[in-house]
Amino acid sequence: MRPFMVARNTAAEFATRMQAAAAAHGRGEHAAATAQVQAALALVPGQPEALRWMGELARARGDDDQAEQWWRRSLAANDAQPAVWNNLGNRLARAQRDDEALAAFARAIVQVPQYGEAHYNRARVLHRLGRREDAAAALQDALACPGGPHEAALQLAAQLQQEAGRLADALGTLDAAIGLAPARGALHHNRAAVLQQLHRPAEALAAHDRAFALGIDAAHAHYNHGHTLQSLGRGDEAVQAYRAALQREPLHSLALYDLARLRWRQGDDAFDAELRAVQAAHPASPLGPGLRGHLLARGERHAEAAEAFREALRRSPAAAGFHDGLGRALLRLGETAAAVAEHEHAVAAAPGDAEMHANLAAARLAAGMPEAAQAAAERAVALAPQDQHALARLGLAWRLRGDPRDGWLNDVPRLVQPFDLEPPPGFADMATFNAALAAELRALHHDRREPVDQTLRRGTQTLGNLFDQGHPLVDALKVRIGEAVSRYIAALPADEVASASRGAASNAPSGPAPGLRFVSHPLLARRSERWRFTDSWSSRLSRGGFHTHHVHPHGWISSAYYVSVPGSVRDEDAGHAGWIQFGQPDLDIGLPARRVVRPRPGRLVLFPSYLWHGTVPFQDDDERLTIAFDVMPA
Image 1 (cartoon, helix red, strand yellow):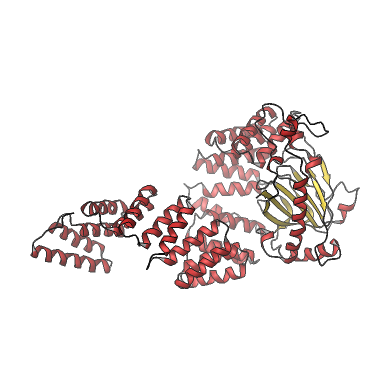
Image 2 (cartoon, rainbow, N blue to C red; image 1 turned 180 degrees about the vertical axis):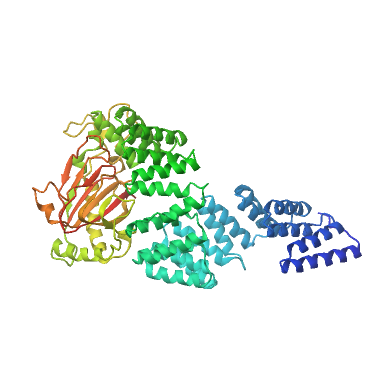
């Protein structure tokens, strides 16, 4: 492009104006700086450096639209400005115009291949787009550039590793970043989050303290601090950490939700106080009443939940989730016709959401509409073939209608299997081992009552994935459990669609009837020698305690391992007190349990995650202490 030709005196005055603009900008006097650049442009209209400055000053005022216009004018005058292309790319990325942003960063990199900041900015956009491999490659390019933003690139690389479950690698990458920038508080906060995921809460707490000392004060930092304090059994301090997050961001949904859950577990009757405060202070936001409705419903305060969902709908009338929540509350209040109507609203608002169809199926079952329930459940399964709630409700519809496909899906005699485990090495018998294991587990039960959003009543439950926390006796048991899971999987029958098509004769249920949308059995077809644990936890029930009837939405195979049981469990005349039962749903639709299994210490029971199960209350003073987990194919 032809250089700008100006008279010597004009050039001198132009330079003076630009120097004055730079000085004013340095003092934070953006209006004065803008006036000087405008004066310079009056002397030399279209001068690219002055146009670039106008963009910088617009950005400093927070006016991204004006900044973009000025930068584009500057590039039109001279496109060989890699820094301007980079700035334009950042503006486009903030506006989530990602394809344009990537193109702008590419222009910068073509002009300066070793432009580390542009490589890093490109990686940030690629990460947001879910293109993790491309983002990792862009970060490697950024790290190869001399003088690049290496600590920022390492920070993002650690985030990619963390998201991929490579937590040890993420920790090492963050340590390298901290070596480059030890005073960068965000790195210490990220390190705390990774240590928390690695179940090293004491180290995580030290990293949080270091981040705060370096000036980190964001809502999410206090929120994550609360998680670590909970893991250490410091519940009162965790409450204060969550409140600190809310002071900085009053509509922080996760802090509101986890604070209410924690206060419930502490036995605090005012557990939803912050949610009620948000509801009052932000009358246009559905967040407060929506979260209250969800938690009140899980706490079986259904009338209050219904009113909370109605308030959420007044604020957000088209929200499918609030219609669904109101329908669930009405169902538990016995208002089945109104529940069906609300779930139909939810399905109409979110026709591609399998959960909405599965919940509509439940309402129709309770309303005595099994054929319509079957249609809704089949739609849910078609949308999400491995949705355990959808499978469970389809099985209920079949059972109510006398459809033999119920027996094909819910083959309780074969698919529910107990295993009496051998003691781990170093223990003479399971009684000795379980006594030691019980002591290890009791130290992890910090709360005063059960979680609001889980199935146990009159008891407590541990936090986090128990099998990942490095407890020695739990780890020893995990080996024995793994052996039993492998035996269970190996003994599963072949996929029965294939068996039925060959006309195999047996006493087992026949394959599904023609026209079923399944092409294979949802448990058996996923059989694999390779599998992994997902969720794992310990439950401790006291007198009157029990588990409500439920399924496990995040599993393929689920479990119960018995560490200790009340005396009444051994009493045949105690009405199966403390026993686990299979086949009775969470709806009062006249379907009893199909099988009960007596717990005993050292026994593991495995079953399909979609199979309804719950426990019978007991009235002993002894505890009922268990470990449970879910398994998924690897």
